[in-house]
Image 1 (cartoon, rainbow, N blue to C red):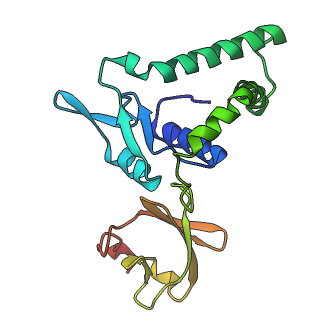
Image 2 (image 1 turned 180 degrees about the vertical axis):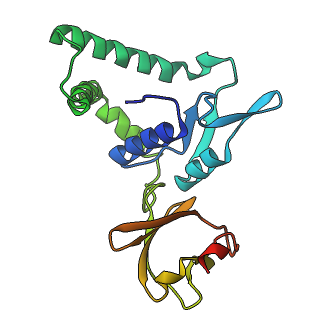
Length: 209
């Protein structure tokens, strides 16, 4: 269920699909939406964030040529027939109203499962060409227990990060994402900071010392 064509929506939808399937296809196709591509002169290229996301799944990103939407025809048609099937079921139901968004998603998933029931054998033929999922989802954090040193720093993947001096010798929990780190003391969120690359000193904040 998409409310916008954002990077977050695109990655979340992809992850839900492959983790439900249990495998990853070697290639993934999008159109030239700005969630995955950006203008580079007269052409469009994949954004760094989208390339990092695809690299996590060891998947080659591909796209149709700008303005040639029929190159994605098989996907677009499948999407169209699914929307038509949902509309038909809503007509039979007699109402578009649902008590909650969750109720609507249960309704849609039932339709999708019915449409996919006759495709299982053909899917098994394709799975032979897929590869395994990575150990964790792209946006799942690495969680570390860290003790703040006497210099008011913690070390995460060889990069130092400063913390308020009042936390010296306290043990913190760090949720390390691909682009940011969130620190907690017990259940209290202390701070969010950009993740430094390599042994960068980007995590040093003189105000903490």
